[in-house]
Length: 250
Image 1 (tube, rainbow, N blue to C red):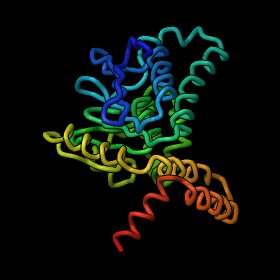
Image 2 (image 1 turned 180 degrees about the vertical axis):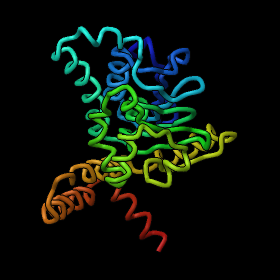
Image 3 (image 1 turned 135 degrees about the horizontal axis):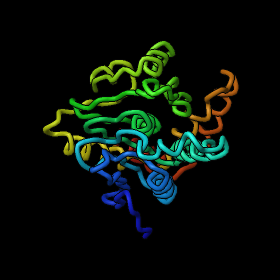
Image 4 (image 1 turned 30 degrees about the vertical axis):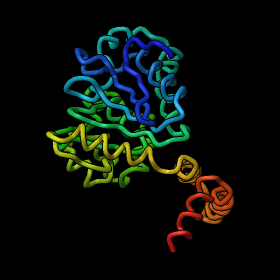
C-alpha cells in the first residue's frame, strides 16, 4: 500500500477513508497534499469518505506558499491550478460515490474539495465559504461544480461576497446533503456511509456516470443515454439478483 505523508488512508468495511492529516495547518492544501488526495482517489474502487483530522475539514490553500506567487511565471500558476483541476476531474470520474464529512470549517479550496465530492455530510456547527475574493482571488475551477449544485444567483453571491455560511444555510441552498448533530456526527456519518457502501456497486456506478454525463447534453441526447444505461443495468448481476429477490417476495 502507498505510504502518504500528509493524509491517512485505510479501507474499512468496504469504505476507503481518506483523512487530510495536517491538523496543525487546519489541513491546508499544498501541492503534495493535493497530489496525495488525487492518488488515493485513483487507487480506490470503493465508496470514498474524505474528512479532516482535528477541528477543521480544510481551511483552503496553504498560505505559506503565497509569498512565491508574485514572482512565478504564468505557466507555473497554470501548473498549480491544473493540479487542483485534475483532482476535481478525477473525483468526478471515480466510479463510486465520494462523500465529504465536514466538521469545523471548509473554506476556499477546502470548500471546493467538499463541493467536488458527490455528497456532503456536515456537522451542525460546520462552516462553508469561498472567501477568495477577500484577497483578490477567484474560486475558479470549483465554479463548474458549484453552479450545478446551487442556483446561479446563490453561486454568484457566494463567490463574489466571500460570505461564510452555516451548515444549515448550506443545506438550505442545496450545497450540503445532510446536517448531523455535533455530538453524534461520527456515528451518523458511519451509518450513512455504510448504507451507501451496501448499495449495488454496479447501479451506483452507472447512476453516477449517467448523471454527470448528461451535463451539456440536449434533452433528446440525455434520454438516449438513459436508454443505453437502462439496458446495461438490466444485464448486471446485481440487477438480476435484485429482480429475483423481489419476485420471490411478491
